[in-house]
Amino acid sequence: MEEHIQLRPRDQALRDTFTPAEGLLFWTILLTMTVSSWYSDPRSFWILGFFLIVGGFCPVILITHERTHPFFVDTLWTRFWLLSAPVWLAALQFTMGVLQDPLVQSDIEGQLYFKLLPVNHLLPVSLANNTTWITVLGIGSIYIVAMQLIIVPKSRSYFERLLPCLCLNATLIAIVGYLQKILMLDAPFFTAGTRQRDFFAFFPYDGHWAAFALLWSSACVSMALLTSRYHHAKEFIQSTGPLYLTGASLLGLSGFLVHARWPAAILLLTFSVMLLTLAVSFLAQSKDPHRKSIALCSAFISILAFAGGIFRAFQIDDYAQTSGALRQAAIEMFRDSPLFGWGIDSFAELLPFYADDTLLGAPHGRATSDLLQILAEVGILGCLPLCILITYLVVRYVRGLHDIQLTNHLMIGCVGIIALAGLDSPFMSPATFLSFFVIFFSALRWADLSRNQVDEVDAKPDLVIHEDHRSVPFHTDAYEDQFK
Image 1 (cartoon, one colour):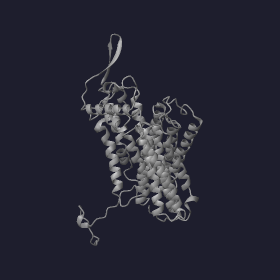
Image 2: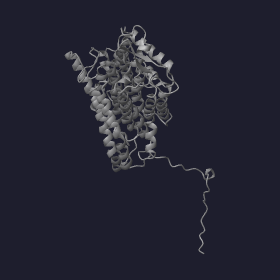
Image 3: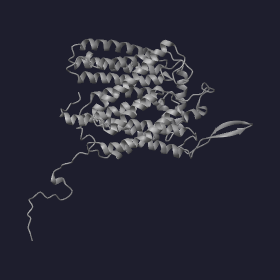
Image 4: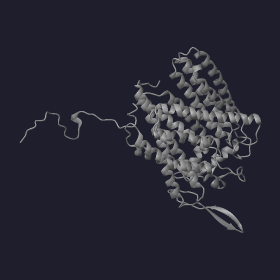
């Protein structure tokens, strides 16, 4: 359980009151999450352009943070550049790759054909697409917006205000999705979608909705567990905990309505794990008078979700053969250019050169595996910066003095999305991409704030060592002043 340090009312008010930078970041996250989740077309350049504008506003938040923060903040810009390094390196790789465009058009008897030219795979490669740069900078801006959550907030109270708003936003979208199914509408709101029946709420592809629901159902259960630990004097059923569980159930159980096989299965299985965690926590730690009833209900719904997830995992999928062929094409593309890949958004353009006969004649934009597609498009060296950063942050958290329960619970949703990325394309959706990094960076920042004093979390430690180990002379004897 996170330690709670008693503070005087004045110190607590200083800690928990929003600074101007915290206020700006709060509304920025709330606005971007609302826009990206209520207008969820993954191919919308309006959304990517919107994030590009918001991303350019982020340095203003950091400058405000530097000038208005009440405590010491050391190496602010160093941390910003290190954390955002994957974005700048990806943009650099794309820019350098434009010098090597592997596709050219050839006119043969009045017909235009594409030809794949040999290129130097020791250098970056990019397709000269006029819209790809919007994708590169838009995705990078989404990351930078979410990344500020590990830099700016100075207290856990910040996340106790932000996460409930985002959980409510996700729950409202789930309600819209259920109403859609009841009314038997033919298309999602605000977008034409894929003209297929596999949509939910504002998401044209319900696999993206499943990924989004997975993250926020985990966040809802995590907040319910946090509420049970904070309100010792109040019964759980009289707190906000049941509201969180209601939202989590609306989100998690929507997996039964999702057409996509693996997203539905992983959503239901992850929701089952979260409910089982809640049941075990109430039985082992809680002193609530209704703990047995709460644990029993949670365990029952967990069993139902688990059974549904197993059933969907072994369900016959008519799209399985096509998915396997697309993943095999991505593997072949990666083998031909393992270091830098073929460039962002190159999979759909190069697929005709790698697809087997079953895929010819039909457009396919994704490899049905984000992990394989990223390897095929940016290669090993393109993936390394982000992988190293995420690994470092996770190892840094694990090596801490003690575990933080809310961080552990939020990380369960992140692990579920990474597992899903091997079997589907959750990160294609801007709403899911933003949600993943919002939850990931919020979890890590919560851990930092729980392990350190509020005025020390962003300050360098004062090193005091014995004089025998000092590298410069240090005088400790009494001074004898003489007047001459």
